[in-house]
Image (tube, rainbow, N blue to C red):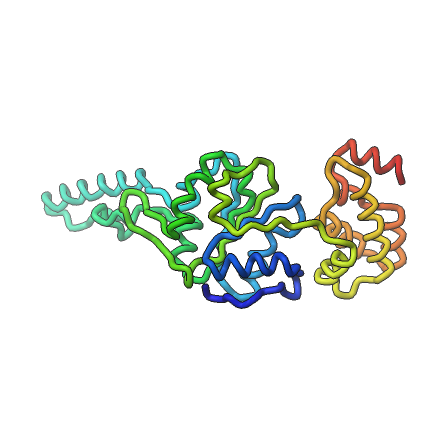
Length: 290
């Protein structure tokens, strides 16, 4: 790996020591780090902030219900290949007729199959030593998606479609791979076995204060105390969708637009509740309680 020293965060990101150790282990061993936890706890921010802080190339693949390994790794552009083949035939015919002007293929040649391989985030990351690769919310993918990655994760290489070109890496040059999951579905055991695993537990109030200070260094302390107190009261109500760190930061970003006394008043009145609560049932329950 490019950077095997312990990374504990930046001026914009607080990385607790357990997560820092897991991330360090993954980079030293050249293995992906699989992070699970409830939404909004900073899983995605880890690789983004790491790449930014260390000035490394960043590649992101947001996983969806129709994600395929071809999209993630690479796919062959059959349409472009066919079109260029037709152009080459036409150019040969034009040459026979003595016509000098040729139709362009954009510098591509049908004899060089790599010219038609469209590289996805994975192939690009493996081609760029010491980069960072984020596979975001892999639990949204079809079941076969993580299974199809087993070979690549085990052997640290991808085979390009049609051309057969191999893109591979070793432990020292492996990209720092972070895979996030909200546990919407359980991942295959064999897949998890190829990863270093970490579950992000929700921060305690003192840690949350540190996180907020990373984003709002000069926040009014009374405003911070009152907002965190209300935030954790909401989390302990047993709501359908408990507010997360992301929601708290959005709420504070809103109220911080006002002068301190007015901002504190808005927090006490729970103005801007829509930043914290995300379902109608929870909204009604909160309004009855407060």
